[in-house]
Image 1 (tube, rainbow, N blue to C red):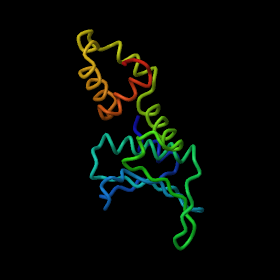
Image 2 (cartoon, rainbow, N blue to C red):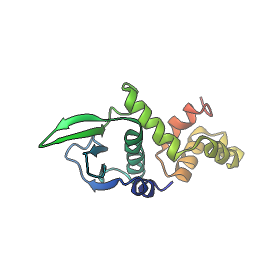
Image 3 (tube, one colour):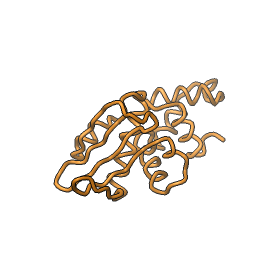
Length: 152
């Protein structure tokens, strides 16, 4: 999945730059009359940037955002190191959206079955192989495999 193409199709502008706070992966800014903007920390790995864009698209499609008033009201969703901590409903939903978008369940199952038996039986090698195939981090793939009940 080329998430940048999906974002463009949805009218979303992607803006990459190094963030002052290195723990912040990305943010979604919505302002009436303007296209939504996903800010992405380009100091992070390409795989993390893909997940961040997908996560922010999840917020765009699922959540209204929190209003922040600068010189005019805007709505913001922020992805940082606590986003994956499973403590905030909206963050959990945006992470699930991103995981489903980047690692569709049926495709993960299919690709898992295509791996040689020796790799399938080694959880670390299996996770690494699938992560490379889906262009996501090994951590993201590990969570996906657990959430799909494919590994314990």
